[in-house]
Amino acid sequence: MRYLHLPSPLFKLILRLTGNSRWMADGLVAQFSDVVAGHHEINPTFEIKRLTGVAPRSFSDFVRDHRDEFVPNK
Image (cartoon, helix red, strand yellow):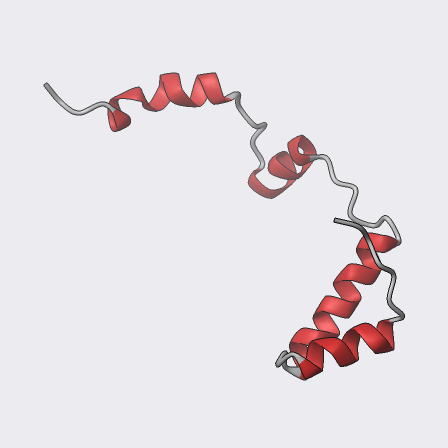
């Protein structure tokens, strides 16, 4: 797979011709423009804490804390 840079008007036209609504085409053009400009560099650890107010845990901690919910009762 390779990246092919299309001018925004051409990208939007292709999206519209392939059945996307004007709203969807506008949104995708804006989103991909941001990605190409490098505005989507995020730190998942920071975002989890920002969104939940709680620091993320390791997968091992999650499994240990919720083991009984995944193992059938005997």
